[in-house]
Amino acid sequence: MAHSHDHTHDHPHTHPHPHVHENTKAVVNRLSKAIGHLEAVKKMVEDGRDCSEVLIQLVAVRSAINNAGKVLLKDHIDHCIVDAVEDNDQEAIDNLKKAIDQLVK
Image 1 (tube, rainbow, N blue to C red):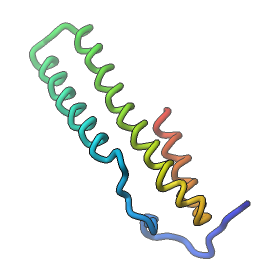
Image 2 (image 1 turned 60 degrees about the vertical axis):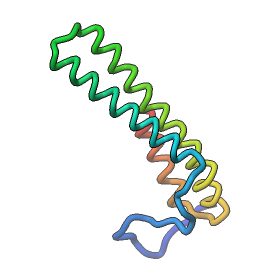
Image 3 (image 1 turned 180 degrees about the vertical axis):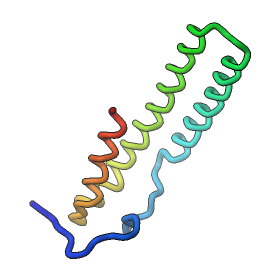
């Protein structure tokens, strides 16, 4: 079923439901750990550590960020997208599709 707007948005879309999810703390913790890990990798580069070791640690940082994204995506689907479907909010669904395209590049 197609959904169209009769007006354009000059501001970000706001959802009628709050963005509080059961895994917010877990995502924040994962991101904090990834930030700390990335700082350690930066120090490795500054210290002239072996490139192979640095690359392996960069892969670990990327994995940590990807895992945080997965948790956030699942929360978003469970809460925001369920609400969007119930409210026939096509814009929120389209935004999810764009976010997934960016996440899995």
